[in-house]
Length: 446
Image: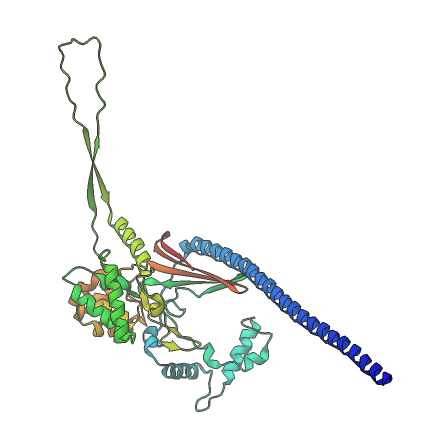
């Protein structure tokens, strides 16, 4: 009996020891879990802080590179003299925006066949295409170190539909790309006179208001905008128009300003007789006349509408939605809008629907647009008088539209984009250029 009791007592003494070991193990596991959670949280916060610090550094580099590129672009713009080219055997850029992706690809295939990049009846690369790649590699054009990529390259990538200046519409020159420090910079210069002047939709003159509204609706229909989007667009423009009507006719005006200066009180003269009476002097009124030139009024209107068109009053994000989803094409309503208060359309550089909105002010818009597109491919128009002579049947309609059209662009947009790491900075500058004189209209930093 004593031995049994001793065994039972021994078992009872061992159970608490095992329980204590289990409790210690449980506490250890809990501590390890807590320490792991704390370590993960700490490492995540450190990583996030490093990422934020790196973004600040990248953005600072991108912003600095963007500002430097803007200064460079403005400094070299004085010597920029864009020349229109002849395109007699090329398809006109005018109707590309209205093509579906399928039709656009068919057009590129046709051009590739005509250029000899593809064999007829066989969707294969021709010998001339291979010879072209070899010549490009010999001249260090493209990535000559990767011949396999060149062999597998799509011939359609070499087909370009030239714009009025050579590069794709609406570029005035080929986009410039270079590296500045750790940032990759891209500079693009666009012809603003080639786009539909958004201010035309806000013309307040009752004599042309009907034509202005018809031109706006024509533009929206050509761009394939829905009724809902068109109505919303009209409402937003109406809110902007209430601030100030848009003008295209400017004459010097004279402002008269009257300023009144109080005269000082007369000083006391001890030598005057006591019988002298004190006279009340009238305040001195001065009239100042200042003349505000037409150029000053245009600059003031441009600066005002540049702010309004890029404010929250206009939903530019909605207008920038892509109409065609493609790797090669970036078509949107905003791409064809002159949102910097331009007043004239360049008949040599504007696409079809913009030409039609311009000639609605005079009539026969579609016929005149067809003739202009046909003739300008061989030789751009040097003057409006030359246009009248070439289209003498429509001279009356052209006369009515003369103040809305031009043959030389003087309104340009400079787009600068800099990317460094995961940060991006961009600036958009609207400028007018008269000879070598460059005037900045507005700047938008993004």
